[in-house]
Length: 311
Image (cartoon, rainbow, N blue to C red; front, side, top):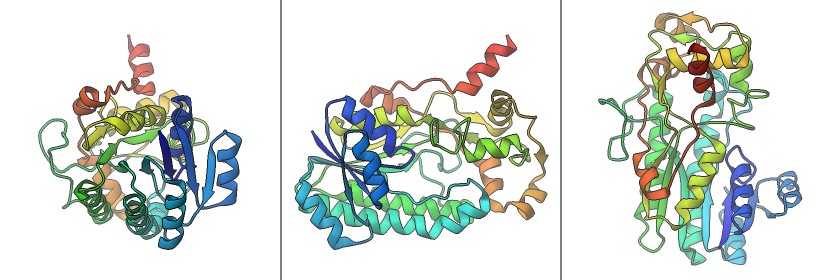
């Protein structure tokens, strides 16, 4: 299958391109820079430069390539995972996902693609009991930036799933970990902050985080090329509260125990979104992805190590 990957040099794009090539697909990576294209070509993939916000450029590229499938992994996230930098990047990231994604989707339809896959969220579900399934509502009434992100993802899903002429899949990924992610044990921004004791457990720490290794996310994305259209939670088997996973992550890194911060102090220092993450996130169920995509995620490494050490 000929597959065009937009955002091909990002955290998920890199392992996805490698996995697609290993599965013998013909891969064309779309990047916003010449350096990105060079890195793709060094891996043996074709690379094309295009600004996703340039509607005509995207249309010309997709019509020329004529892919069977298009995978939208467009993001514009900061290098450092801090509340301040995430807020500063929010408008830019939202514009790329909405406008760039719309340009890409329209071009895929015009070029006659037969499958479109888009990145969505598996960690912004609304309140409820137990793990959320794809039928549960997203957190439209969350803290300001979280609610804004939820509205963005809802628009993406409505566009992708509502196109009658192009079967679409929305993959609700968990928090990425693994190489070149914020939780990369060596170079990740979150890992650096944990080592510096700058990543606290806030309040009760009862917010439930659903992670996924980027290579497992890539495998699920490839499976979605031939799956039923629809929405899938692509998260691992270890949804866990911040009060559990963050100390285990620190231990895994050989870092000191994370500090604790009250909700009141966190509101002043980090903002409402940081408090929401720490106290109100709801974990997600991957049952549908297991049944329909053959999804088989690895165990969350730092929790596995922590439990083994406790025995």
